[in-house]
Image 1 (cartoon, helix red, strand yellow):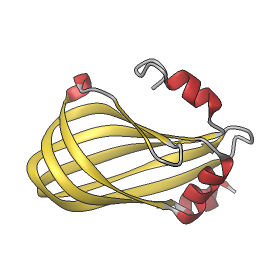
Image 2: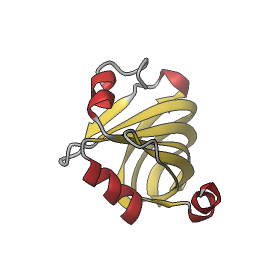
Image 3: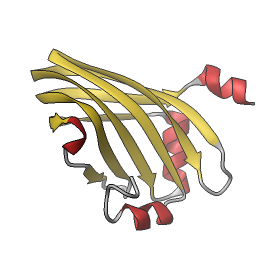
Image 4: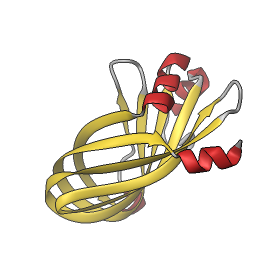
Length: 143
């Protein structure tokens, strides 16, 4: 992220915590996605492993691998994300391999979200939801 997205270095430096997810998305009339990642408190180094899943309806088709990076502006927003999970809605994708543009989205609460395309080809517009939650088994094994 720091190499591929100008401006992300200062955002990363200012954020007390971040989360990174590897995501796979498939679309053909319905869209499904799944992935896993880790949320990190930069001050303490605490790592919380998480899962994510998405689903919805769409127009288009394809498959895509990408990473999603969250940069949290406050410790409270990070703690809310890891303890309560998070729901998000979106989507309009047009991507082909690694050359697709990296998109940054700033939420009203100040959280910045980057999507870094890894591979795949997808052209779709969808109405979907994404849920993030703690991976209890993996977190318990780390204690």
